[in-house]
Image (cartoon, rainbow, N blue to C red):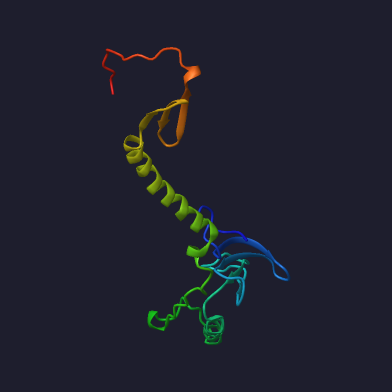
Length: 163
């Protein structure tokens, strides 16, 4: 299923497709069912000449009925007064909030948003040293053991370190 470049919104298809029995069509849809096929004639003014379009209005029957009524009246919808215009919203597609990539993004965002501040706060308050029978244990985001047999010298420094 093709999507609008850079959006990754499930169910939203826009672009050139091949449809069995119809050939190459330009698709502007939100679902894969209840589609309306529109073929433009040569020399079409507003639409691309001889282009096949596929739409997915929420009310496909009403959409086709409206177009047929305009054709029967011998005019285009462009000629109709603005008061006669009817807006057809797209058919509802899948909810992007339930898409696995959306959920994964939320989980990753929360883990970074909570995890990094926790590491910063915990980093300083979680540091502690323990001198025991095996050696020096340093607890800081885990446990590190410096065994007695690996240590060569232990002494106090008489210098100030820069933070």
